[in-house]
Image (cartoon, rainbow over all chains, first blue to last red; front, side, top):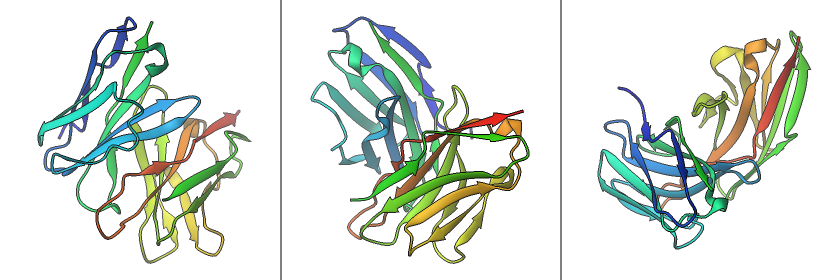
Length: 114
Length: 116
């Protein structure tokens, strides 16, 4: 398996634009997580899915953020409209089964909003 | 809710010296504990984990960690540091809360610097 695949690796956009980040989890994994990493706040869990259903979105910072998982092999994180303070590295991770198993991370998407 | 505290945002050791990265957690139920490593411009990679059983767990690259319930700690150690160990290290906690599974909660990370 190629691991968790995220696209794009880098995204530069202007304030106010819509941004869509994409994630393909490892085949067969039933959990998918979206994290945001910044210097100030570290790694924050934004939302996670189990069997394509959102379980906990309490980490999503504002209504400008939304995430979907239309099927087991694809998820998106959308920011509309984007703001400079959204600049961060966004990671997707997937896991098979219960919380005592390893979560596998993608390479991340570095988002810069100017 | 669970939380993780990593003492020291930066730790510097000499090559060949002992590495000790500290992690304390809080949770209302027995936790699952993890250490992940992040190299520059990379995602996170699992070093080791504690779930149940033996409290001293061994991981990749010569790292190990000991779960101490009485101290709510899960410190990471390596007897002899290598230049290649320079990276960001994250402690994380995960719970099974009965009604469902929680996501991994991470500490703020410790940047390990290896001096030649």
